Image (cartoon, rainbow, N blue to C red; front, side, top):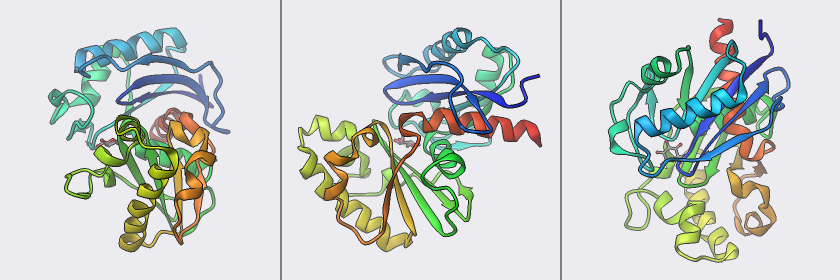
Length: 252
Ligand code: BGC
């Protein structure tokens, strides 16, 4: 019996990461295993990468939560921004379950990160609306209202300055592609967060994703009225949220 631990797998546009998680405390109980997201992001290749990570972790009886960077509705992936279009409409949860030979809990990556920050991190004990944003290959968002997740908000795809997705200009990857300095990026992000602020009046924004390891480089330039907290779980939020949700699903 693996009462207080579960495996979290976080599939992103750039890397696939996994670890065993203590679901009481949100701490990692194993090292964090990571492989690059296979080029093209095809379903078979991603499933194969997840299979390899799970066998590296062991723990065949532990519950497993898996995140994916797309809209997830009833186990199906309904979009594909930084992975192959073949995921659109795919019954991804069943595909993983068949291939891995075990039950899984399947969830959007930003939603998992949001839940993790709400349970164990920067959004803990917040009563109003918290918007958790993940700045990485794309931009992911999670709305947590009074501790409850409102899934699939997808604000990285707001139309923005002539593009149909803000993330194509503003994600951490876009910063590198556009060769923007940290200050310049922070200034552009400020405009985006100000727009979210106007639309949703959150109590708090949480900034998550790999760049949250060095917030001093850009967060001071995000000059907005709403408080900003830096993700406590850094780049592990997706893994931890996935494990937490898997544990919850099985505790029901
Ligand atoms: C996807 C979201 C995801 C975000 C971060 C976006 O392109 O549409 O579902 O949460 O990237 O990975």
